[in-house]
Image (cartoon, rainbow, N blue to C red; front, side):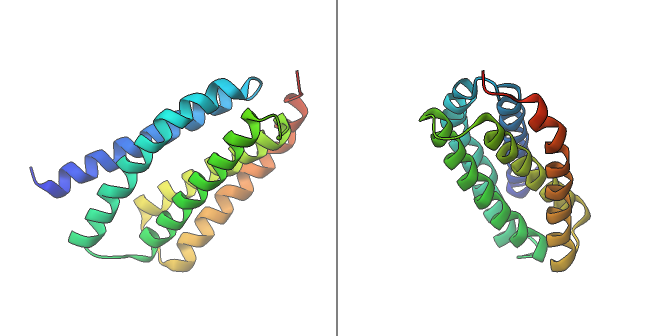
Length: 151
């Protein structure tokens, strides 16, 4: 067992936590404040568990591959949009429909990054994977927007 394998384990656990938080947020779309409060606590834990080991593995492993850079930028985007959505929802400044679109887009980004981590394509393939995953998620938003109505 090496430090690299432990970092990989923590990195994967952080990604699982991110997906658990996204799933919880999706479940709580009608009462978004419950999910937003939990995300305020567990979101930073996910951040540390994904980024620190990821940076360590990039520095000590094969180096900065294009897919790793796309993953880093994608995670920053997920975190920033998620924080904005959570704050806006908790302050009553975002509709349930807009929160659903944000959630689906962030889930799509995360799935695109998982594709990148497993397939390890070049730069254009990595970007394309994330864009396609977001597009699929947003297409899925059409029936979701009909189902999510303000209470």
